[in-house]
Picture 1: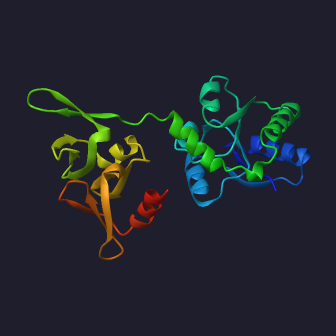
Picture 2 (picture 1 turned 120 degrees about the vertical axis):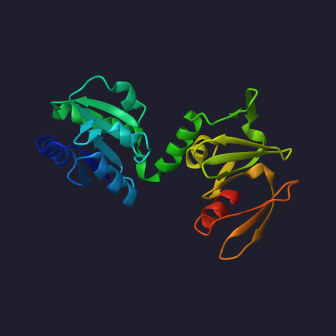
Length: 251
């Protein structure tokens, strides 16, 4: 069964879309009508992605692209809006059609027909995986860190970093020769800038490079001890992160 979510903060517009959906195909299930970015986050965090989303752009609590940029919505989107200046952002965000209000049934029908042509076997398509691949291709991960020193700025190649740790807001990157470099950056922000196929944040204060892992051993309380190549230091995963780390290391 096709499942649709409506993102629309005006009741009359939502009612019109519901009428068009029932007219087009009474078997379609409308799973939710969401009116704000807050509701989008709550619903898509807790529920499986629908087949299709009809999405207004300006909502009660701001522009919808603040939610779409977080990749919460992984299925195709038909945008419905009174504004004609968001085409680029719309089609950069899983958009397959852009309907200007007031929306006629004919334009609605054409958009639905396009959706069906593009997804003839929708239920067999893994949109989450497709979205992940697209994101990976389009994302530019850090290739080097700028390390400020008393005499200038060093360029540290990310591929040569064995692990990164943090203490009191100061990060320390240790390279393949055992040299350490200090710099200031929030570790969670840095983790987002690094290639997730290579780097993994194993606990609150440490990120590890998979290419420098020599040995992984069981540790206390469902944690893992990780030995770094040609290095005496051992890193330990947190209990909460260990299951995800196991999946990451095996893929």
